[in-house]
Image: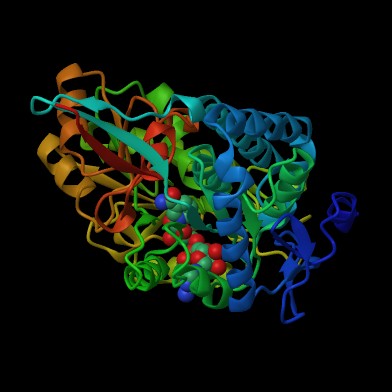
Length: 489
Ligand code: NAD
């Protein structure tokens, strides 16, 4: 049943997409994708090697200097719109595929598929609105800037939101006129493969999108170190981000790094608690907490601390954890390894005497082979404790009390990360002070995430990375500015 959809979508052949053709990996080897909901084999994918990355980069270069590079911006936009329509027609299939592959509840996977449609629509429309400037200069000169694509862009993406991250990374690069090489994660890449099939059907010129599945330390490392790419966008862990940046630096290749987070939501006593409550828990347990922008720290002002903690605990006790297609609140985590990492953190918390204020329930229907963890809410956690400092990437949140605005800012900024922050208060002055004081790539006031808008620039400061994706900022990053100065007297 599960593998049916893989076969129906033509994804069962373990092939790479290079230069507009489906080909086996050069080494002929394959890897297994595991269904996190029950531990069974979901599909086999090709184990791409450094030689496959060479072929993919060469195909992208040929496209960049050939058919794809010769298109006008409006023509590129039209092709992206065709892909958008095909993706929109297949939202249900793509959602099911993503749910099976990542383990996320179907409703969340559906939202991800719709987000991919939005990325395609947004960047299709933006392609021909990206332009340079004329600059007033000395007498006798006309100076203008051209915004040109880099040429070949590399994209290394993780397993937690394959469709969304492909959308904000690859689609933006294509809109700006680059030819792309995508290396999705070895844990979950079926929707990336399905996307390549759709792009093919939409007649995206051969070589504009190349997809090489495989291991990070093989295909990923080869892409990051490749002298033939002109730009690299990486989304993943900090440790891998550092390796990738160092490899790209040897070729002077610019890198956008989208890394992890330990994002806070700060709840002041004057906040509309009814409005805040759903966001406090949902933004922590969504995708089983495997979200870079997960709100894993909840800071609450003392006068409302007990009330907020009590209501969060109530919500936790109602959480049901089960298979991705079962309609539960929380699915499994992606892999046995990820489950172990989260279990270790839970043990550290309990071993250090932290109070587990509430837990969710793994339903009895959850298959034994699945990678389930019990969502856990820890109360009164000291801000310097490991659970309040390190990215867990599981359905675990810590609640921390604070007294006043200054303390809230100090705790919120007191980790190595700076990706997203939420502030809940009715005080207008405080809203603006916090928005400025928080060291974070995005700040949300009286909401968290703003519905994930594709229009909104996204990225980190500090250890959360640098560079921006989403919105027009991503298009600027996917282009290089050329200055043309004409002396005409
Ligand atoms: P990871 O760094 O292990 O893997 C990410 C990607 O890098 C995968 O495609 C993997 O194959 C590849 N990779 C692994 N080793 C490599 C190497 N040596 N050279 C080149 N590529 C290599 O990350 P993960 O554990 O799979 O993903 C979770 C992390 O991603 C978390 O830290 C999370 O916060 C982060 N993340 C960040 C964002 C964001 O936008 N900031 C979004 C999603 C996830």
